[in-house]
Length: 457
Ligand SMILES: NC(=O)c1ccc[n+]([C@@H]2O[C@H](COP(=O)([O-])OP(=O)(O)OC[C@H]3O[C@@H](n4cnc5c(N)ncnc54)[C@H](O)[C@@H]3O)[C@@H](O)[C@H]2O)c1
Image 1 (tube, rainbow, N blue to C red):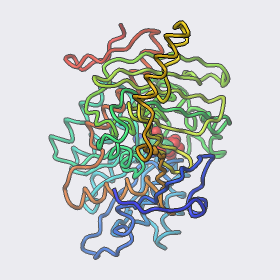
Image 2 (cartoon, protein in one colour):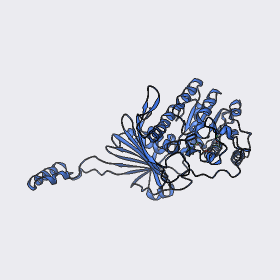
Image 3 (cartoon, rainbow, N blue to C red):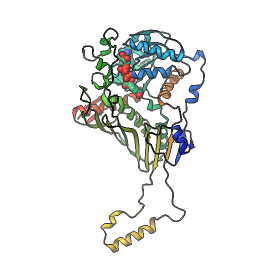
Image 4 (tube, protein in one colour):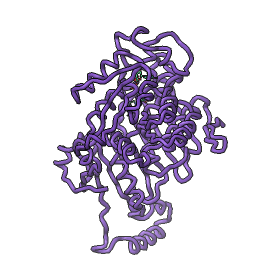
């Protein structure tokens, strides 16, 4: 991964900082696709996509896609009519045009003008939208987490394979230059053998805890509530469930589906994980946001993978800047979610003075031991090696989210596999489900690869 050296002053100019202390040796990472993404694309190569779901995330996805060269939105779909208006506000701001809108995503799948679809619908709709898109011959980008239920993953994998479709899941960390750098350094052995990876993240605000305000005009007249429910149990029209679906098991997966999935994506990518975690144990609780939600607001999970262990700790009661850490026998790499920085702190793994255990020796023995130790281990003049930390900073204007969307359209164009195909998406999603199965069963959750099921032991 290319990078160039920078000084502290330019770091302050190039990065938000977010409380991350930069190492003395700092480098600016290069974004591989930024230049390519700025290049004009001939009209014959333009990809036409349909947008499904234009809510909090879909509005940003749409605004980003319509600014990518060679990519055009030709239709938009949402079950809530207010978001038809929003879609055209976004599209016309970027292109001066408007597009037809519909409540039925099937209309987009039937439209021969459309090459692919981009979906940002709530999680309980992901599987159906992806499978229907593949069966209709459309490539599909669908937001994370790939699945709402563990059993949905293999249906998606089969639909993509059977129809030979590009499926990309929207966990943008899979396209992140920061995580790519961490992977490169770990693969080179810079921090030795990595036994443990961890992610910590905390939020402390109503918005951070998904207490979203429903659109004030929302009603059964402008929202197809029955379809919104999908295969979830029938409940009367409920604007709170519409806006805060993450907090209910019928539609979302709580902290794992919303946020763990990003942590797991980063960890799986860097550590080269190509199967679900073997086991997970979760503890947590609902301490603060007792508003009728189904999920805890503190969740802590330990995962077992064949060659390493991982821990994720998330809370909705205290703000803590997100960090993903890889702990190795020769140091530690931290990827900061705020501040866009990767810090590498090497360690030599050696004693630098006689072991404190010698304080249990009688004085004469201790003195002799210490003298011998110093003779053998003290660095000779000119021999001592300084172990320096290094920082890698993201370039100004870089967005892994934009990079990830760009990668999807490149896959559609080139027919090369997507950076985050359904196998990868499934492994990350299963990690989310393992966490929740363990939490709700108060037991260890085990991935049984032969039956492709999660078993609560
Ligand atoms: N990658 C990220 O960083 C990131 C961030 C936030 C959300 N997300 C993901 O994006 C997805 C959407 O989240 P959100 O916060 O935007 O939700 P949202 O509720 O704000 O928006 C979802 C929209 O989808 C529409 N919709 C629901 N079912 C539909 C259907 N069958 N057909 C057409 N439209 C339908 C809804 O009417 C709504 O407008 C989720 O999967 C979420 O996990 C990803």
